[in-house]
Length: 230
Image 1 (cartoon, rainbow, N blue to C red):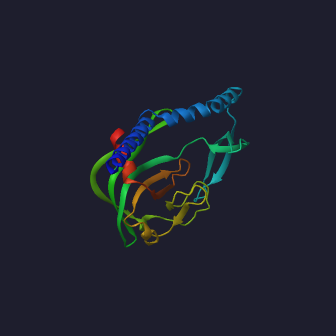
Image 2 (image 1 turned 180 degrees about the vertical axis):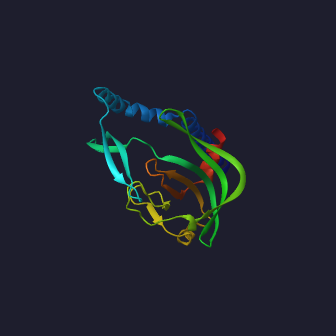
Image 3 (image 1 turned 90 degrees about the vertical axis):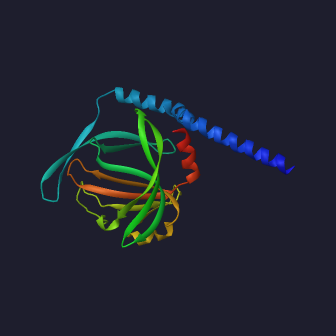
């Protein structure tokens, strides 16, 4: 009886892994989402073809008192209930200075520095416009050090300027994102297996840059499965 249970458990695990493989390898979930969203996308495309893009311009002052002009485009967004709202977005995207995503563990925190041992390197690559693929690279473990003293958390009220962010997301979609202002505040994460995004953007209008260090729980098992098929 015990042997039969063991065989059954092995079969179940294999089936789950095969299912995960096909979902990840062939983009089944992506195709389902595309099929669901296709009518909405087509409707938006049709409405956009009806007339030229609607733009507006606003003038601001930088820290030195110099004027700069920002171009905005009108977009229509929908909430979860299907209600449409009019919004304006900057036509020029932020410049990415660097963007790194790692998986691993925080070894220690001292002198306002986070010592992170990298186990995997992750990257999202755009295969075709609008479709992204997660790549997971198994690498020889190495350490990166995040010096929180180099982050500036004070909010800047000037348009086009932003403060830096140190964040942790615990998985709660509604109330799971929390900001921190020193490395010691993340001491509860030492030893946990985490995903960390480390990136810096530059505002194209002012040239001001801002950094973000974003942690969230990960899984070495999930990462291992992804590394097998990507």
